[in-house]
Length: 404
Image 1 (spheres, helix red, strand yellow):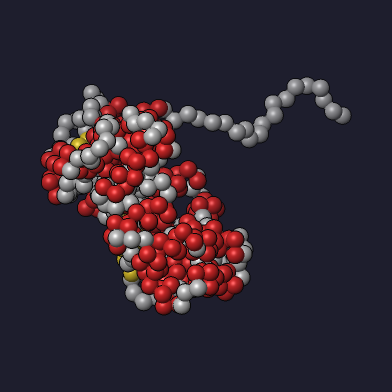
Image 2 (cartoon, one colour):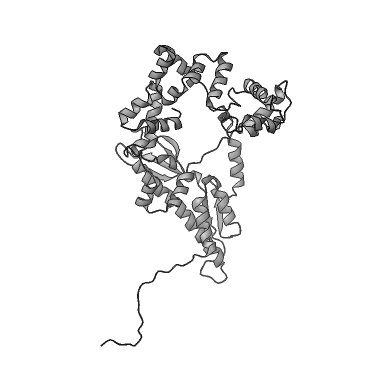
């Protein structure tokens, strides 16, 4: 007979527990910090902790300022920025016939060295009338060094270089003006037929174009020093790559042995708990990067050992599914961790490449490598599309994005 008496039901219940904020912050900061700022982040976290001392990369028990100063002495001075280069050039070789604010010139160029605003607003920005702007731009294009600066697009950039280096646009200029669409498609057969040229003349003109710089402004990009955090080393023929930390590039923490032990009264337990939290976060950071590195070394071994010209298909979702790490954590690791490998020093993120929709066994990186190779061999994108059983539109889209 059922009873109406109340009873206590027991069962599992999902609950959440908040980690104390002072212990949570180090885990977040150290997991996402790039290696270049890791020493400084550790020093900031432990600035008031008497139990821990930060040892900078390659250093002993001193502070990191001396190490950083020595690093700066070993790094060559960065090149002039594009803006500084133009100001110096104007000071040494003034552009006659125009009166404009030269201090504003660099602001009107994008990193490639191309004009980043339409012509009329560009003239207004420099204090030029609508009539003066076209003449001023043409004068700047013929004056600026390296040639190609102040172009409005790639075609104009290359035409400027042809005129200034060869004295005329020549056959390369004719290709750009009359056969640009065929050139973009990589269809040399149609291009030769359109221009009514023999193959030898076309190849000479294409070599002229290949010798030009499509992005003259890139010569003034700032140099960046890379510190690898991992080493990938081959263990032997047919064996997997070993992955370990580049310890000489990593900061370490040293616990001070002076004073009372944790079991004695009067011990600074708050400092001890903070030190443990930071130590645990640093160990978690290093362990996570080694695990991700081992996974990538195993999956991309053929590429890293030089057996393949490009990474095989591998995406962030594959790492998440097989390793269990959250995608945001993986993304931070891939964007900020460099490794020394048999192929050179690479960013871990460069070991990923999405598969093509029409060919899941072929990565985007592999396709673009094949397109660059086809360009040097004089083969068209249409031929590559047929060989790989891919849509010509897909091949052309990737060709445009890999400089094909």
